[in-house]
Image (cartoon, rainbow, N blue to C red; front, side, top):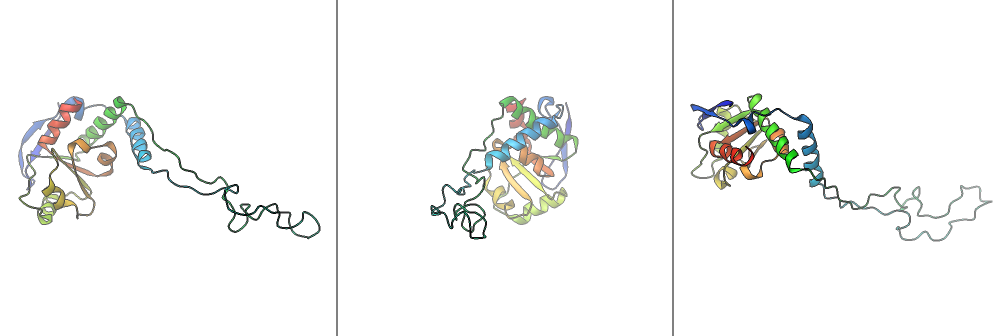
Amino acid sequence: MPKIELFNKQAQKVRDIELNDNVFGVEVNNEAMHQVVVALLANKRQGTQSAKTRAEVRGGGIKPWRQKGTGRARQGSIRAPQWIKGGIVFAPKPRDYRMSIPKTMKKVALTSALTSKVNENELVVLENLEFDAPKTKEAVAMLKAFNANKTLIITAETNENVFKSARNIEGVAVMPVNNINVYDLLKYTKVIMTEAAVRKIEEVYA
């Protein structure tokens, strides 16, 4: 089992803890992570874009001038794509971008992302993370102690004080452990997680 240091908010080591091999010590599967990230980003797309083709633009029913004898190029409608206010060639239409990913692949991708954070020393586990009140100054001090810039903070439960303390810090995001996903784990350079959150992840994915 991989071992990792457990810290307090002041970046002082408390003790070593063991992580579950099935979650934090698997073989990293880059292909699975890539496919899941592509699907997550595709599923965020609204797909509501729409433009009119020449058949849908109002007007243009009559031929603008006769076919021959004018010296101008032949035209059949003033709503053809080359005209101002004409239709759009291959106009985009509303569509569904959703992609489905098997649960097993999601699990492989998530455990691969977590393992990669451990392997690259980008995972920090805290004994506890509590603020008496929303204090951005305390959150900044904690991040500075860990030399963390682009950071994802993961808590065991929804913690309003932690969320409000970090929401105005650029490059920092806070989420409960049940909302974690591969995209956010890879997007942020460092992941700060409470010990309780680690155990919850192991309970679900081990």
